[in-house]
Amino acid sequence: MLPKLLLPRFCKILGALLYVGAVIYAIAAQPDLEDLKSGTGLLVQWLSMVGLLLFTCAREKVEDEWIARLRLVSLQWAVLVLILTRAGVKTYAWAVQDGTVSVQYGVSFLLLVYALVFHGQLYGWRLAAWRKDRNHHEE
Image 1 (cartoon, helix red, strand yellow):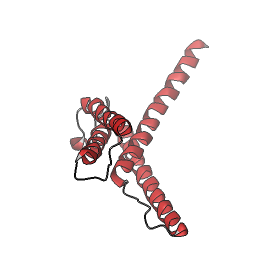
Image 2 (cartoon, rainbow, N blue to C red):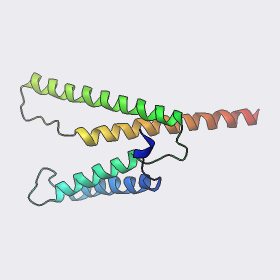
Image 3 (cartoon, rainbow, N blue to C red):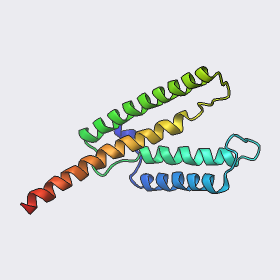
Image 4 (cartoon, rainbow, N blue to C red):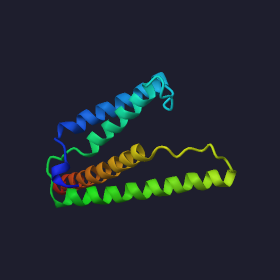
């Protein structure tokens, strides 16, 4: 991701709060997300997408080449998972001859997978380095 497109670090916390708040409200109130007359479903969808976008586009403490590579690899995995999931759902709908199966989860799903892969790799490496350093000092 281009450094000019990255948001300040506080946007990660703001994005996480927006996303978690939208998910908690959606679970608690169970609004019809497809009903555009009341606007509640649209608001929940917007809050979750904006939250994910803020979370995924926030700058890390150190933005170097390794972080840029992690961002690229995470985006590639997210696109691959999205394509395979959509193809799987469409194949399932074709196999059971059900035209009502919906695949309208593209952007949110893509951002969520990106965030999970990126932060899983980022903090997985940090945790492994911390464990290695801790074990080295104990010997």
